[in-house]
Image 1 (tube, rainbow, N blue to C red):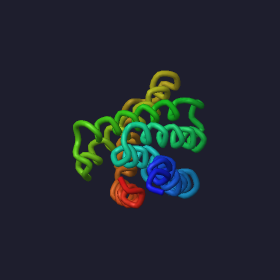
Image 2 (cartoon, rainbow, N blue to C red):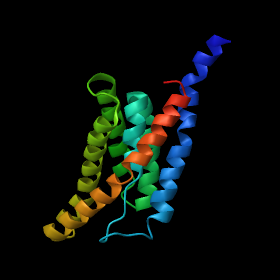
Image 3 (cartoon, rainbow, N blue to C red):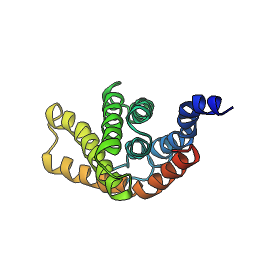
Length: 170
């Protein structure tokens, strides 16, 4: 019986994080589209990717990042692969950092979460700067508002991911 439990543990860990993925998607796509602050909407899915990758490692972080990236592209109407690739790479990177260099605590998560969000905000703003000729000051103010608004969700998402990881037996 122990053999079967070990065999299905990775699948169980992935399935246990689906509610977090769905909750983050619902918040980002259905609720926060109506709650703009200074013209910015929060990115909750990248925060969830950083949290899952910090606790579950690079492989599960990459898988979660791939799923979250597909949902993020669908919710934001971005080019079809921008967030899919970006969040997969972020999930892999944060997972590797969590496995090797960083402690799996809130300060390390907050640093990784902030880095992931900065990268996401930059990738959103760059096409507007290059192709649409948007003013840098307006982009910077909106990017900063989006970054701060998104970081507000770091603690609740962190606690949920940590609880789910402990339930899965990590």
